[in-house]
Image 1 (cartoon, protein in one colour):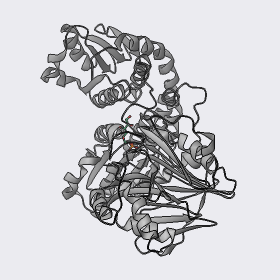
Image 2 (image 1 turned 135 degrees about the vertical axis):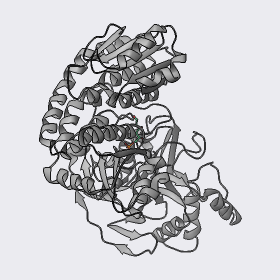
Image 3 (image 1 turned 120 degrees about the horizontal axis):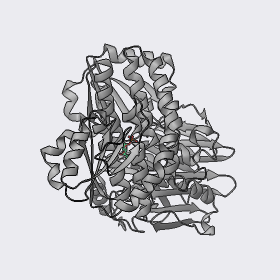
Image 4 (image 1 turned 90 degrees about the horizontal axis):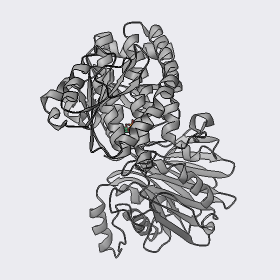
Length: 582
Ligand code: F6R
């Protein structure tokens, strides 16, 4: 959700660096974008839509901030795009998060003579900073005092025409500081700063950083200095180019062989530590949102069928309703690609307050969840830039499969099975990619697609529906196959597409697929065997891990559906990669 960046540099290229960094953040939100550069005064440039060219005059300056927006308060317009400026035009601020008490603050500021020109919650921040500057406080103290008024979540970066520093602060939204020779950077995530910085520092909630000649960190509440370590960056972990693929989505689907392999290469010591926590627990919850919730559901099937352990999969956004069941004998396994999803972080914080132990399964290095969890298993899937989760999902499933097996001391065998499954990925892509392309052309005007599967494949059906919906905007619905006859079959008529996941021709889903076919449904089988009822067939080689691998043809179908409808698969409308608001 919203990408923010700030740059302070010796060589007057701050605008250019901020612009380049912003382009690496646009997967976080792409409703509108903007930059402010400090040159003689503050120059502001804002546009709606995805990031396009920046006028050359914006490249030069000692200080710059940038923002790519995912609208929360106020419609998508140039006016509402960030940066927002103070009434006197001398302070510019970019913000990610939601200021809950913005109306109250607007009323407070209006009484003091401030007037507003946008519909955003953010605009109160530069106004408050101006208010404190007018009381002769320094820039840093004015920003800090302004932040004390805010309720809600924020990561902000502020610059001032009158001061030579760059200030960032966070509460509830991510912010990382980067250091290179003479250049200081602040951004929502490492990808934006990795090409420039050699060292980094992750800010925690309630911390403010001021860069001028040096970097100094302060506690927002008390104003006291904090000493924080700066860490060397492993650039490889943050490199994210398309490597010749037209879109990140396709590249990331292709990377799933490696994603499964890397996810299964966990240290035995870590797996033992986590397994011990789970075994000692009285209750186990697995939580996530969206695709990560589907992985959580998969996990609960794996834990039950492999290790006979009950683990309830709960939506992170609904977890508050289960808190009365949580205590110090509870383990919460929190799944998140980004490690920054607001619903997950809130659930984890509440669980920890009740004394639960938290195991994070996370992809993004240094993200908030990794810092909150008692133990973290990294997925090691590499940067996932496409807004849709693909390789991170397979990585999550692999980690959960490994964990379930380690509970019965079979993790070495599970590693081998995962590595065999990984080897099948290129074959699955090769056999099915052109079929997916052809099917996409046929289905591109479909009104609805129904998707069925049994056991873990019932979850694959949910995930397949999500992939199709979010990237092609075609309505898709997934459910456990036996449920078809309990209602949805009423919607099946001639040529309605029904995707059936069936491990082989004797899978129980086949019966339900036949029921749909009898009503005229067009049956698309994803299976290791071609059943008679299939009108179209995606082949998966026979594998114990069919349920993990069988999503791949539908990821490809979703990708080609988007292309056949002239949509950008990497940036579907209304979405953002990292959902840092509630
Ligand atoms: C779907 C998708 C989302 C995310 C969800 C959780 O393709 O990407 O549904 O899975 O927003 O995100 P993380 O895993 O970062 O917590």
